[in-house]
Image (cartoon, rainbow, N blue to C red; front, side, top):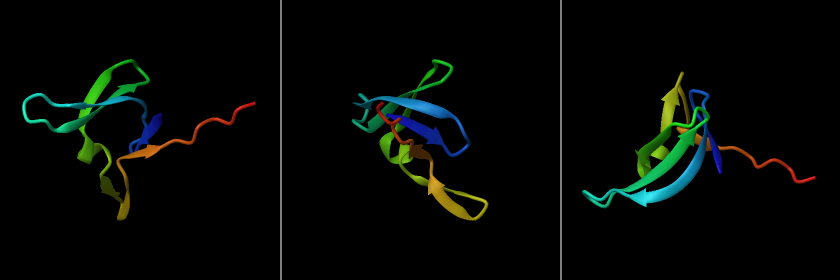
Length: 67
């Protein structure tokens, strides 16, 4: 699944994982440049405030239509 970050970047969700140290659920995702990132699940799906508006940190992008 592809997500758009509120600052504009597009990321592919790789998987959900568990941080070994304290069992925190984390999301593993890859940027368009190929770099792989990890962020706590609750932070990945939280809302942020931008210019007085609340929006998701990462918004699910719609899947392309099948031909």
